[in-house]
Image (cartoon, rainbow, N blue to C red; front, top):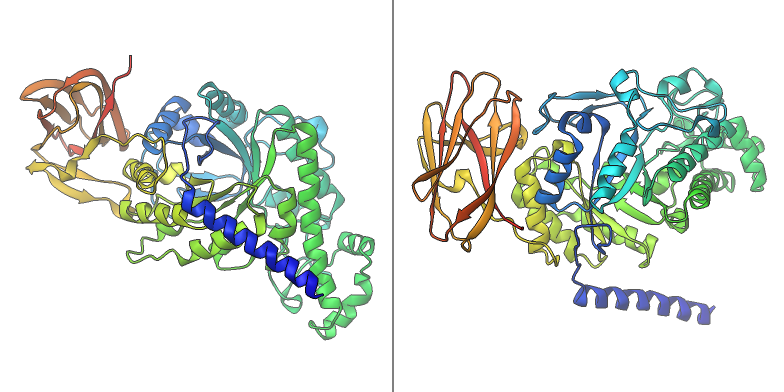
Length: 541
């Protein structure tokens, strides 16, 4: 026993020493494509592609936030988007969207499936396009890494409701929730394996990500699951007679060993499901892996209480991303204690040889300062994260995406070029008033008449592409003019009527260090001339 303890102590010390050594010497190196050792990821959904277009989306993601890894939510649970915000900050076609009840946005190979088959969207325009294929092709053309996500509820709740035999059961045999399936049900299990296998076999994916809720975290007498006939069969395979345990646990939920055997069955069932999914993925595509999107700590709960043993499941994962959205709360004195604890826990459970990615949330009530601070905490943590994930593009303003990139630079990520430009609200203003949109969709300036914003260009002389970000309202056609050293070089009208933040880029403009830059906005009708940022991008022949 003493010898065993010494060996265990040596292993723990070795892990700590290795982590410390990595922290001291480790400087992550970013590259703009899938070859990057440091991942910068985000997600996309079908309606965003429809509304903004893949070219525009990728231009934004790559130039503003340096994204080199993009995944699509191909089975999205029912939810209002943008999450907890009134409208999308840069969507030109719609303010919001009601995501459907777990409909697929790829073309499934139906012959793979058994009793349960994927459901396509009720919207014709979604059904008619293989959105995953479209995204993968666009990303691969730019050399980006790609993935797909199967979200919390991979089977439509409406479908589960109509099939009571799929539902999880409480100890009294009644259904716990008409929208939640039991992973030990053979039809459910076959469907999940087929779903992940379909994606791995038919799409060029680097990973398939999931964040499924399999069991609940309730105690036995409060509706804890699952005690269905399929769990009874699975329990017998493990040597646990759950039928005999039921009357004992009804009398005393803490009766032993029955309680621990029930908890072990839940963990066994979850681990088995992930193992079977991983084995199917690897059979279909050895270069694709299963990624866990760990959501539980964000809700203030422990994954183990839901039957998910990350240590056991970790053997079948290729990577983990922490779904940490701390920045979006907008707390000015945020210390990111949850993030620190979360990273420590998952690195220990996952080990040092598999990638751990930290979520960062530049949306809702986040500020540039919070984004900078949050990335710094993640990258200076002893867990040595292998990347950061922008959570999420559809709700992130352009300013917060630029802050996301700046945060990585300030935290020491190598290979990133700084953004050259100026926030218009930080310039010398004449008849322009700074404003702040509700829930911080964006910062900027506005005028009801004619406003001017001026500053001195302090970058090296040369040829630049200039990007101007503005808000195009629906009631009017305001005019924006750019003067360089007193000479008018650019003029355009805000005539798209999109009621969101947009940008235009003007190429091959000669700039000299010391030039005075002036942006003139002239409002029209009810439309205020709103400006956010002017960016100078080195022109490359």
